[in-house]
Image (cartoon, rainbow, N blue to C red; front, side):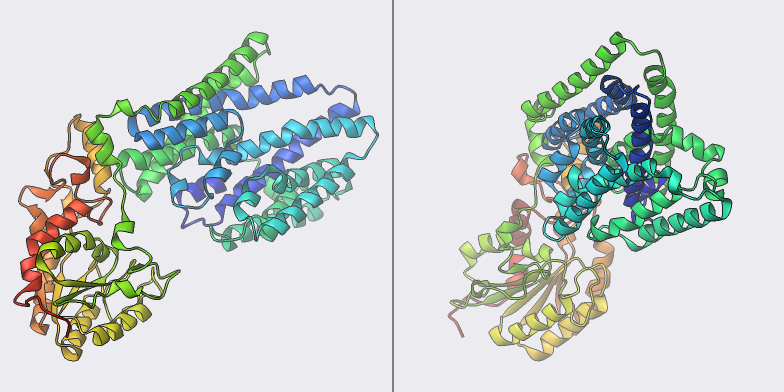
Length: 608
């Protein structure tokens, strides 16, 4: 369990920690199959009592966590996100979270990190397995079949299906119960073949340390890009099985049986339930990424809540005397959670919680399709060439826009200015690729080659003006190299547009945050927008001696009172759709403010 917690809290430090779920599956299959097999052997197994125990084990803490998660979503989520949480809550209450997530996206994608109930996919798989496994065990006992053989055959079939599907259907293989059942069945095989293992100290220690090594290797070797489970699942599953097979080993007898580890084991279930929603809502409430100390504090809070849940919620239901009243209460509680989730979906996230203008502004999305994405704004992981329409050859002057996606966001403003100014536009932009010749951008490996290609195109199309724009945090020397090369190889005027304001949390999140804290619309100017005046001065001093003309975007949007959050009061008037990309309205505003300086003394005319 600690592997999963550390993976969720510190993914860069423990990239393969997600295998903790696979370790848990093996342990679960071992303990529960062993219990059922023993009861079947003495003729005391009751299917009703089995499910009674599962309900008392699973329902109390889960009902509490789902209820608190829905309550937090009411106060801190936008309607669309809250509606999704309602859907996930309904699926979790029905133990179908894995199926719901399969239909939505993958485990490791960006959006998944914002889903407070993402982690309940594993609970869905476990409960779906135990819906049918006891029935199969009863049939096997009636027919006098070997449970060991049954578990082994089904486990091998599940593993082979997992290997066959992992290439073509990786997300389905990750989430479907019959492609993960082999992990639970590995524990079941161990439970049935327990007596076949040598329990001497030396043999136990050898198996235990081998198991620890295999689990450690999987944690070290795997990450979110690994084709998992697939063949890789052999490492944690085999490691867990070997470790469980050696109770007399020092690792189990001393380390795992120590009081701190036993205490973590007691609260492991509520700890697993609490930690992920708290991490997600911590980021939501902060409106930004969590720092290392903040993540550590959240894990500490998760531990305290887990202990309180175990002491005051789990113990009374799980270990208290069974009664029809308790069972009815738990069933009714889970039904109420499912009903509440359905109501949130039906109510479209109860959008009436927020005023229309707040709801609209906070829901603004980056509209990259308006920047000719895929044609003149390239994703370099998929595209290497610009469309012919990216260069207008029918008039002059020709303004070439060269830069990253923030340069692409200038297009709506340039199009509007084009209506009255009559200039032509050439757009050669690429995501995450600033116009810096000779620079290697780690996040965009193909950027250097693309900049060389754009420079060749510049010499071919002979623009009158080259407008360079990007997120200029690094590589100023390479930008200077670009300016010098343009001045040497072309007759074009070179105009460098400085950074637009940066919003650390993203401006839509700032709008929502301000409303939650002050119950009012964010002011027209906010000090939370970071102007780039200091860096503008550095760029101007570096580039203007080389012949560039520098224009500050920060001067257009910001003054002593702060940076513009909106240009008017409508949702479409917000100035940024995320941290750095300006909206269509802001693009028009910016270009209208600087177009005279961009065009300079170049007059409109016919093609050269």
